Structure formats: C-alpha cells, structure tokens
Amino acid sequence: MMIDCHFHVDETMLTLEKMIEGMDKNNVMRTALIATMNETMFEVDSTFQHHLQSFFRLLILNAPPIGNKIYDGLVKDGYFKLYGNSYKIFAKPNNDLVATALDRFPDRFLGWVAVNPRIPESIEEVEFYLSKPGFIGVKAHPFMHEYPIKELDPVGAMCESKGIPMIIHLSSEQDSYKYLPENYPKLKIIYAHAGLPFWKKLWKYVKDQPNVFVDTSSDYLNPAIVKMVVESIGYRKVLYGCDGPYGMKKFNEYDYSAKKSWIKTLPIPDNQKEYILGKNFLGLLD
Image 1 (cartoon, one colour):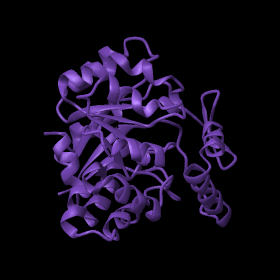
Image 2: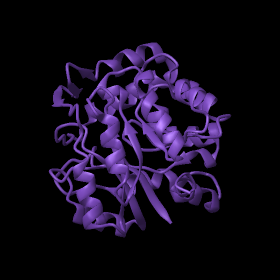
Image 3: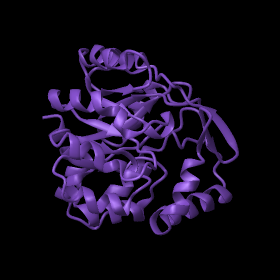
Image 4: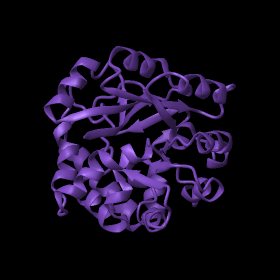
C-alpha cells in the first residue's frame, strides 16, 4: 500500500477531488494532510530557478555554514521569501481545513495536527483534533514559526505518552535534531525533507536512533539526494512524501509521478521500496 506521509491541503492550489485523481493514477491509497503553512505560491519553472535550487543543495551538502545562512534568509518578519517573492506565513495554521478533508474523504486521507507552541492554548487545540477520527499525529514547524526546539517540550511529552508520531520541519538551530530524541527516547519522530538543513550530520545521527525517521518530501530534494539518504540510513528509516501542492506551476496540475519516481528508480529491491512507499509509515501508526 502506497501512502504519502506529507502533503498540504490548499484548495486555492489543488482541490481535494483533483488530489484524489492524482493519487488514483499513481496508486497512492492514502495521503496524510497538513494545514496550509503560508499563502498560495505557484512556482515559475525557469532555468534560473533550477540553478538556484541546485546551488542551494550543493551548499547544504558540502558547505553547511553558508547553506544555513541562505536557509535562514528564507524566513523573515513572518514571510517566506522565495525567488524574489514573499508569502505570508500563517502563525496559526487552520487545522479545520484538514478536519474537513477527513470528513469528506475519510477513506483516502489522514491528518496531522499543525501546532505552533507560541500560540495560546496550542496543546488544548492539539488534544481537540487528535480526538477526531483520522488524525494520526502532530506537525511542528520551528523553521517558519521561528522558535527553539525546546519549546516543543509539552507537545513532545504528550505525543510520547500517546504513542503517536511527530513530523518536524527543522530550523538551523545548532544540533536541534538531537533534542527531542534524547529527551523523549520513545517519541516517534519524522524529520521532514530528509532532515533539512542538516542532512549529512543528521543522517549519521538518525542511523542509530530507533524511533527517528526522515521523509523524502519537497523540491528541496532531488533523486540523487534521496539515493544518498537511503544509502546512509537504510530503507527502513525513510518515508515517502510529496510536500504538495507546493512546487506546482498551475492550478489543479500537480505531478504526483515526479516524487514517486525518486523511490521507484532507487537501485534497491522492490520489496525494500515497498517499505519506503508505505510500510514504514504504517509501522509508525501501529
């Protein structure tokens, strides 16, 4: 069973019906949805853009101090800045968008509860949504919401006690990827985008952490980096995800096959690919 562990619901970009159409074409049985994090953002497909993406990946992999400075510069004063454009970041993500999708298509979607620990009563909100059918864990975004990882203590403790996973988009805070695993050793953690922005250091660390995983979502990555991740930490630690609808060029036109091909073309046996494409994620959900 193929399951996409990381996709945002934003019907200003991609309707739920069109999402399901794309899932069906690519044999994705279920998708775990996350609330929209920022304003609608369509990308312009250009040679310049591709060169910038390649240069950024090169720096993150081989010159992390420089890469992290560029990474930090993507978020400023509540805006996500990309290719000369600015998109407002939602300090309080709208989890009702996910709840509505689960109500409409309960057999196709799962839900992450997005949390910003700096919003009053955030723990109460997480508890409220986790009580609803279909919600399976918590999404935290220290990068866009600009807080130190320690502020996730209450959420981490709650998720550990409930036995549910957290998916986290890390900031560049030094060694932040070690904090939750070392303070909540039974907490199931997925670091989004292969652990951006730490990549090689994080992969070395994750390899020996039984409850820490990474996903393959987002255009931050490419096929070569996905191959490096699997070679570094093994196929049992990697989860398939898209991070759609971000990366789209036009309304209602999302290419599901691109991220799927990153897994399908890996030089590993098909039975190992099945773990990345769904079995690993199902294991986290018991």
